[in-house]
Amino acid sequence: MAEKLWDGRFDIPTDKSVERFTSSIATDSRMFREDIEGSIAHSRMLVAAGILSSEEADAIEKGLREIEKDIAEGRFVHDDSLEDIHMHIESALTEKIGDTARKLHTARSRNDQVALDVRLWLRRETEEIIAGLHALRRAFVDLAEAHMGVPMPGYTHLQRAQPVLFSHHMMAYYEMFTRDAERFKDALKRINVLPLGAAALAGTPHPIDREMTRRLLNFPMVSANSMDTVADRDFVAEFLSCASICMMHFSRISEELILWSSSEFAFIQLSDAFTTGSSIMPQKKNPDIPELVRGKTGRVYGHLMNILTLMKSLPMAYNRDMQEDKFPLFDGVDTLKSVVDIYIRMLPNMKVLSERMRTSCEKGFLNATDMADYLVEKGLPFRKCHSVVGKAVAYALSLGKELQDLSFEELKGFSDLVEDDLFEALSVESMINRRTSAGGTARENVQKAVDTAREVLAKEQV
Ligand code: ARG
Image 1: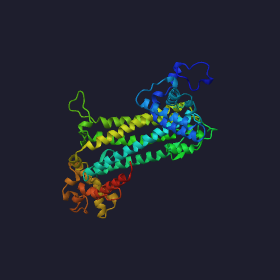
Image 2: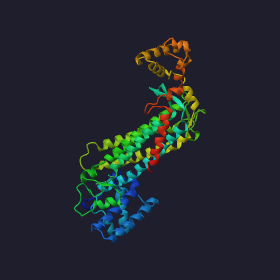
Image 3: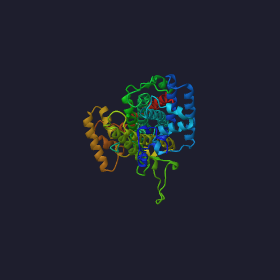
Image 4: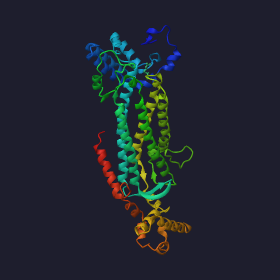
């Protein structure tokens, strides 16, 4: 049995069932690199503080690097009696270099150590997610540019409303994922704070130099209050909250891709390489990726609820409950990253069925508002126009026709203001291109949005 690092005050050994129950090594071992980086920085700082000699710090660093290699190459044995990654590494170090290893934990507690490891880990993951979102946003802009000019029905209440450009629809997702990237960048400011030096909860009497540790580990700032430092998991909740909003966006595009690839819509075709078949129905080609993404959204929301509930009502400062933060955080990160990654691969392989989108704009009175707007331009108050067009729609419906299928005389019958330029105003192209208000779907606007997005993406360093 491994020697406990805290066995001084205990008379009998820990029950095996307790070791199994309290151990977190199966989950937190994935932070081993961060744990080792943190310990090396801490030991260098202890040299400057006169607590370690530089020979001792060198021995510690050399031992830790060997352990890092052992773990990376799968030569590291987990032992529940050593609880977590922090104690596993310290115990392995003691085995390697002897008593010097026992000095490493001076002026440090596992409470600030674990906070450090999680922050270092999450900082790198968040940067990777921001980079992934950059590529995803580029994929939406690419789609918008490749299919510029293709009209599709725009929906409200999932009922055909007014025609829009398919590119406009894609750029709407560009906007959503851009906000997500900004949210992650903002969260990063609060993730990227050095907790080490808070010790157990009250600070330490040793003459440590937190500023030096901050520099060594490349943090922009040092945490202020030692109690808050070890008790704080806001940054985990905040990350998962950003991740949840981002997944919500993914669930929306996923729902649309699922609808659009049905024969009812038939607006897109997902590539064979990114769909699966049915084991019983030979004709089926299923949009499993968007379906799973939609499903995984619930999983990430669950992790956010998990953290909020975990932290609810916890008294100051560290409580063992907090060990439970790692599973939801790790799985939240893994899930989001896998979703970003599969979308970056799937989107460019999607086929856009532009003819079908275009012809769908011809049915469902998508030009009714435009007929009203036409009459407004001829001087009729909008509410009156609304009722005139309503009557025209009802008449066309009774004949099984669309407004543009009615004759000039029939249309003139609803208002004297109708001239033969009405047909041009009711055409899909004209409806789209007249919507030049800022943010509207006119082609020139959408092209400008694409150009701006390209400039924004080019300026971002990833
Ligand atoms: N395994 C613990 C965690 O993840 C590390 C901190 C434990 N601290 C303690 N005093 N037991 O939260």
